Image (cartoon, rainbow, N blue to C red; front, side):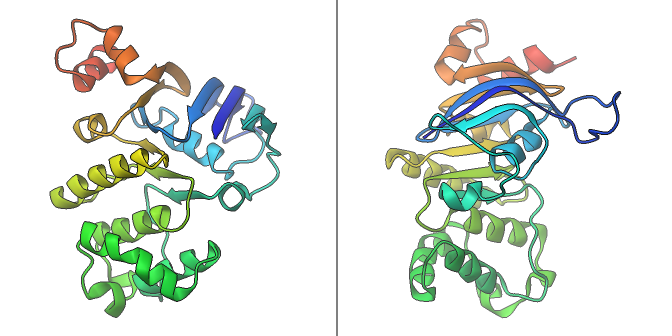
Length: 249
């Protein structure tokens, strides 16, 4: 699929004429067979962009089209209709359920039986070192890292065409970060891409195909990572050096 934004803007405080747009006149094309990483400071618009692309925001201007079909901003079905997965920066889990129950619920929403979900969970048990707390503790007792792992499994498991992961490396231990990067590369080899935001430039650099650099709701760069490198031939430190050259003070 190709996700295309044309002159798309969004303001959270729409009733305030003086409020700065969280996104302003974004023109983007995103190939869902590739790994796209969006980078920028806090407040740059990264999470807002993900929320718009996943159908969580209403009242935006401009157009959002999927494979040429303009989406209705009043519909909240983009995740299900397009087999998209989503893991937010701050996981929202039901405190009275276990992580396993949350994952099985997500699987059922995607048309999987419980046995199919449990089978599909196997790779993630190993990848994220999911121990007996997955079945024996409710989400209210989870650490930040535990909750993050459950959110990521929910955002990745199932017969998905694409996943949106907001700050997926934040809160994970080094082994889980390594395994997640490996998994995202393996998915890409199967034609299943990922859209992710990250402040961890070294981790993002290991998986990136395309880069979106954002600042104050504006797109400063959008293109392939090789094109970004070609535009900054003096930046021998790769993505980290380019980022600090562009956005550092």
